[in-house]
Length: 278
Image 1 (cartoon, rainbow, N blue to C red):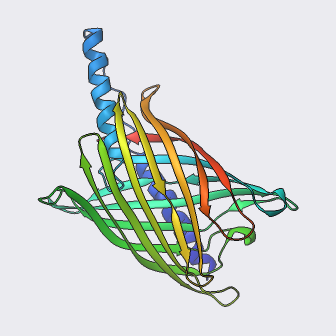
Image 2 (cartoon, one colour):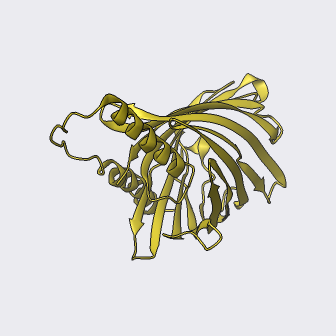
């Protein structure tokens, strides 16, 4: 674990964010006035299309989610706030394939007997995904996932990790369902080696006007500690405009179906996703 490599992964996460933010369109000339009802209808259609793309982890939509999580029920009355900055930047490889970069950069504050704040470890995934669904309508992507020990002492596993990741989903009418999975192996000298499987089955239903209801299980199994952590999340989101930028605002709650001794028991999630459609 070297400082240079840590800086490289941190720079990569910042690069993914900058690529997403660089998609902000230049100011255009004022459009010709249109009928108000027509404009509203077109806006609703665009919101629904963006909401559908957001339900697809490997869509060609550039997005920058800021996901704020609150978890409570830790031993000793502790709680944790985690802001996940998760830029998604798709790149076209050729006429048939995309590669989608997905970065998770956590910023954490945990209270209790002792208060700690700092960065968490970065998780960086790359999905190689066909631009067209399969003949039966399935959308999929697969590639590598990397773990970089960029976190503060209280929030790091203190080792590098690597493994495979994959996602498969289907979108039928208002419904989107599928699952994302990865497995990371790590190696370290001071802490037990990382050996963890992440499994996220999800289902979402579009309600129209850019509104979506989503449920998922963000399950992690620690093979070293032989322990599941399984939060069930239920969220509502709405695609709308913030000034000239399309955004998705979301919020919801979760309950832990299983967790290590010491909690947490329940939590809340809210946030904002910046959207940059092509």
